[in-house]
Image (cartoon, rainbow, N blue to C red; front, side, top):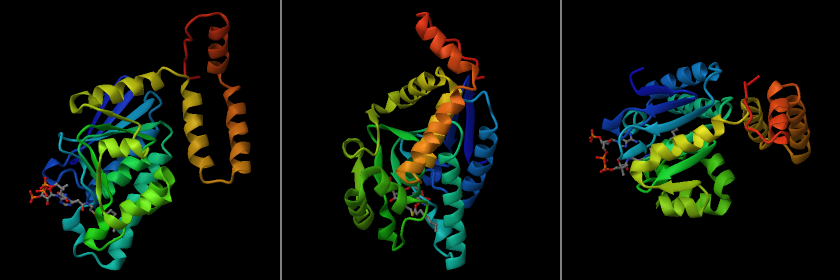
Length: 258
Ligand code: CO8
């Protein structure tokens, strides 16, 4: 991998977009590498939570690579948009929860990458925006769809039509991020939350993610039926007996992820 760093810390995987000279902009090679890495992580049963971040303190990801896109034909543009969409959808469908630790600029494709993660923790210096219209293009990696789903159509429309950047405090206010922390504490905070998730019954965590991700694409009735199915599935796992037994006997559970 040329443009990604990958580390494991026990049950946590940390994926760092590492192209700092271009503020971690996403070209097709970065996206292909991310696709391959996500396929591998999906198979890793010992990994419970994934954190996605950008190299350096200045930028999470400053968008899709404008230098690569400039001479695109419409056919190439469609292929590129579909590649990005496919990779970001695979984050959404990854069995493990994915946390975006947003350091600095999360613009265009960077904001879209953060939005494809399950939730976002931002450093105080984080800046979010969908500046595509300033380049006379639309968002293409899910921004026109995930932003209104996350913050509502009115706020999304304003951000997408004006291309304005918002700071971390505003991102927190509109619900685009869950927490804002000092820059130096970003990774520690993301890891602390990830470890808390990793200590739970992993079958239940993964099924919860699947129920939310799939359910949001269904009408409520079908989504509730899906929820009842995943709830039932928990009762085929040893961890369910362990979790409930531990509660009733006032002890800490010892989950085996079975
Ligand atoms: N693509 C390519 N290179 C970039 C990008 C980018 N998105 N962003 C920054 N860089 C490069 C700069 O060109 C510069 O390179 P060099 O040193 O060789 O001149 C280097 O990174 C440092 O950037 P700046 O000198 O500009 O740094 P500043 O601190 O002055 O400014 C900004 C930082 C504000 C982040 C500024 O770099 C900026 O505005 N970047 C572009 C942000 C943007 O418009 N992003 C959206 C891109 S479009 C997009 O993401 C669409 C996604 C869907 C695609 C669908 C497919 C068809």
